[in-house]
Length: 404
Image (cartoon, rainbow, N blue to C red; front, side, top):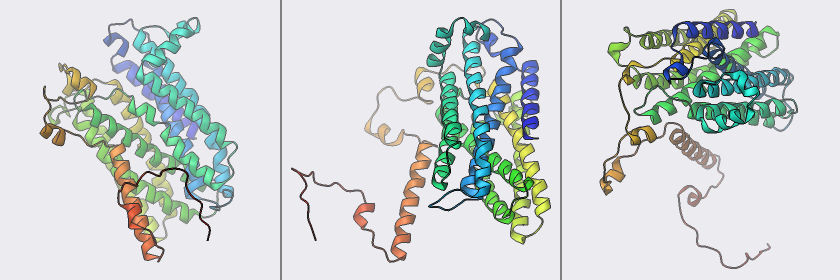
């Protein structure tokens, strides 16, 4: 059922964009490459992202939803999830490689078939076009995940794969051509957070439905943990989506342009996800209504698939806010302008918070402080000097071993 749904979503998305969206190669002043690229590229993107979500979901099943012994092997249900995770990672690798090839074709005006006779041109194109490089790296990481998922038996290894699989999508999002020339640094980071949140949410929903369909035990625990993942993913997806849309479309263009209508449709899908998630949390809190929660989870999969297709469409459409805008060199490189001569005051105030790495740094610091407080409450000493930044005097000579 999942395979058929993903194939249908890819075919529908590719067909609609090939029919109604402008050809990117023609916009670049190159020759039209036909439906093989115009429809095949967005279809392959949908397959790659859907397969990535499925792979992450089955890895979540082994590491989070139905975990095994922290110092031993994964649970039987977790091991049953590692096998489809390997298969979906292979699908993701092939689809990502296809996107990389079609991206080079679209940006060079060469038909994909010509790369069979000119593989050197394909290699050069992947190396020079950032978007193609990102998809090629994603294919490489997915291949590694597929190989390791076939060997993994321990719970800790499953946790490592859960961390590795979403990380493999970072080259795609960080090299994507955002829909905002101005502030593309913020828009690109928002896109990264949006994709990661959506993949975790969709993957967890797929894994939960698969676990329920197999008739496995521990459904209440799986449902509760999925509800927690969905709860944390919702603000991440919602806020990052709003940030991305705010830089690409003005409020007056929401109902008067195709791009704006796609944004409105995405907002409607998000509201549907909010309602479904709230009902699922209610079912978990009351300890009943598992059948209703299962139906709502199936609705979540459908809505998230629609949102993924809409996101692919937005990536192929030209935002009205950027019409006629010519970015300066600094805007092109940084996302914002700088004064001609920087002063000390400029260095103090003209900085921008990085939504990805800045958020990770703040989160890591908060977790460190929380861990230190937990150790202190448990009566286990933790020197304050290890928490506060300090400089240690350099050692001279070889360290002296001390005994007793």
